[in-house]
Image (tube, rainbow, N blue to C red; front, side):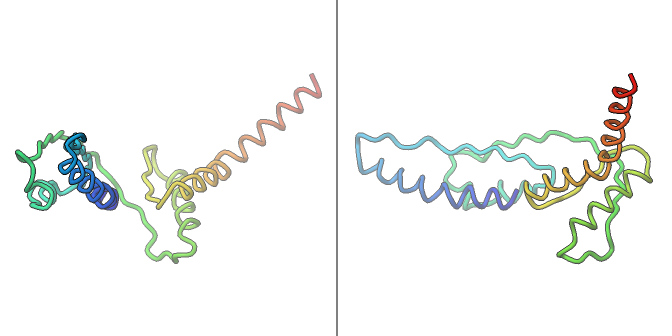
Length: 148
């Protein structure tokens, strides 16, 4: 969230200032409307935004804040005590499979750094967890077709 907000502000504020300044000097151009941003996060420190004068000093009124109460659920954390950087995906895959096979049903939340890692992990999990079942099912079906 912090990186996204930093990028958003860093990319848009200078551009908006330039357009605003041009609009003020050129009577035919209308100024840009106020930028409205909605930020949603379960872990955000709201005071970082509502009490930040760089973000709020030029606003006509304090930013609106809507708090939605959430529910909490018991969580058990499982992690590798030591993980080498170059093989963390392999360690993560092994940990996911171990949890899946040895613990009661429930969700597994894994933090990966990007889309490529997520897709790679999804593919590897499908191969490890469903690969044998899929190929076994196809062989049985082919045998039934030959004999039937």
